[in-house]
Structures are given as C-alpha cells and as structure tokens.
Image (cartoon, rainbow, N blue to C red; front, side, top):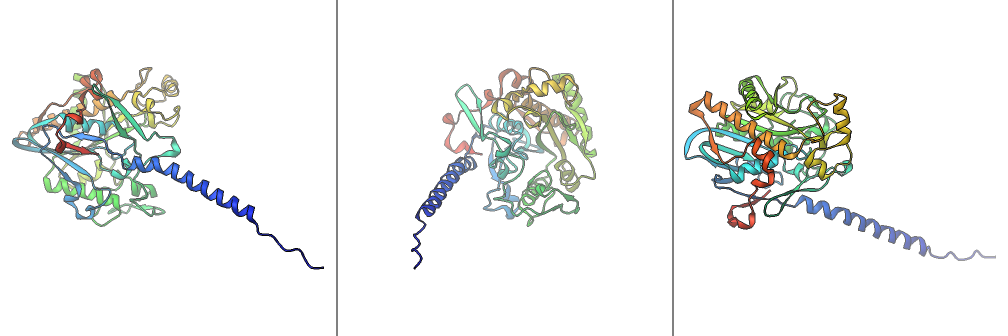
Length: 395
C-alpha cells in the first residue's frame, strides 16, 4: 500500500510571511521617530554680535564632509584683545550648557577681543538617544512668542559615526586603558589626533582651533548628578586655578550661588580640563551644574524632571545628607543651572581681563544668574520668524 502524498505546508509559510511583515512594520514604526530625531534642527538666530559662522573642519581636514563636523560661531569685537572658546553638548544629555550658548549667540555683543562658540562639540551624541533609560527625544522651552523644541541627546556618539567599539579604548598619546565606550565620549578623547577614531578627530580639530587662534580661555559646559561629588563646581588644572578660585569667590559673594573649585586630576587622561592645558597655552575650565535628571534613584526620566529638577526620592536622600548639593522642594530648575554657567563664565572672563589687560575680553548683552532665575531661559531666545533668513542656523 503506497504512502499518502504530503501536502504543502501552506499555513506555516503564511504565518512566517505575516510575522515577517509585522517585524518589518515594527522596525519602521520604531525607526521613523529615531530618524526624525537624528535630523531635527533647532533654529539659532545669529545675534548682532555674530560676525561669521565657520566649521570645526576648517581646522582639521579629517572632519570635512563628516556628519560630526560642528558649527563654530565667531563673535569679533571692534577692538583687538583676548580670545575665549566656549563648548557645549560634550555630553548632550546635559543641556544647560547648550541653552546657555544659545543665549550668548543670540544676545551677546563683543566689544573687545573675540569669542568662539561651539554649541555642539559632539554632534553625533546630540542626535543619538538612550531609549533603554527612557530618555525623552525632545524637550520644549516656553518663550514670549511660542515654544522652542530641542533634541535630547545622550553622553556618547552613535555607533553610526564611531564603529566598531574596541574591547578597551587605549587613550592617545598616553596609552591609558579606558572603557570601550570612552571612544565615543568627547570628554575622554582629548587631545585627539587628525586621523584617529572619529571623536579623536573632533577633539583634535578643537585643539587646532585653540592653538592656531591663540585662544586664552576655554570653557567646557557640563552637568553632573547631585549624588556625584564633582558637581556644582569649576574643574581646573593648576594653571587655571587662580582665575577659577577668584570667580568662585565672587559669584558666591556677589550673586549668591555656590560653585566651588575642583582640581583637574593629573593621572586621568582624555579630559578637556586636563589635556587642553597640557597640549596648548589655553587656560581650560570645565563647569559642572547639578542635573537631578541624571541621578539613578529618581522617578521616570520625564521632561518635567529635566526642566524643574524636582524629585521626591532625591528630596528624601537630601534629608539624609546623601547628596553633594543643597536640595529642597524647589528642586534644581533649568533656569538656575543655565544662570550658573552664564555668570561663572562671565566672571572668569572678567577676572582674566583684569589680570591681563593686554588680552582683555569685553562683552555686553549676556544675562546673568539673577536675570535667568527671574525671567526664565526662554525670555532670551529670539523668534526666528522675525530674523533675516541668512541669520538662522539649525543646530
């Protein structure tokens, strides 16, 4: 007796097709928001003080045509003097510095000397996200004329720009062994090299800017957890310590907020406040403002927490003296953090200008701590709808 003929497995094949279609649909549904986030631009209105906008690749051809190439806003005074560089978004999940430089670009006018501003030193990180930690893709800042939307980035560059990750990152030139992720962290890849991994190329270009333009002061804006000891401070090497200390005392006495001085460690390599000073004549300063959003024992990572810094778990820890900053029911709002960056920077520039009048830097139009706490950050953003088209740049 012959065996019955086998029938084609039509049903399992159809199931596989349906599952493949569903998987493709889910991939597209999840990928589209990330694609839009990666290509979203926030308008920056070049204020009356901006004399030109150049690219970081102008100082290192290794960045030409790369996604990671950054804008550099230049503000030249009518009178020659000293020069300062301000960088934000080294870590794009620490946005207070980014908002501070937007305010400077749109409002400040330099009378003496030159100011160079890089709103986003790690472009890739600003267009990356940390979905596993529940980061929002965007946050909005209210203004008198509407709301301004910003991307929420993350600490490290995307693998799209920095791949593959090594098992261990070997820092150049000291050969110190660092975490593999530090290859994508632009506060671990200083002083960089022109043909190295992509983030080393970024920091090398910034070093070349400082060396070629004879930059006197460099500021790197950051935010740190309230449970991290190096927070609410100015980090400076020995060569910069005098100006950091003077500024710390002055903002405490005159403006009423704390920003103590932390020494830059000599044996931890790759940090901006270490390598900039060691590989150029520039005096570096890294500014840390508290950001409760980054603390681990908090509630959900919401836009509200990012902006107002209020969290019941941190409040409980503060009562047990587990935090490294003062913390109460008022939280640690964004306006206060941006104000600290602004006033501390302006005070360091003022102290440097007093001590070295031949390299003085004078500017006006920049709000200080009290202004920002009173008025809010959005008060100082310009409406792009009222700006000349050639003065709008998307970051």
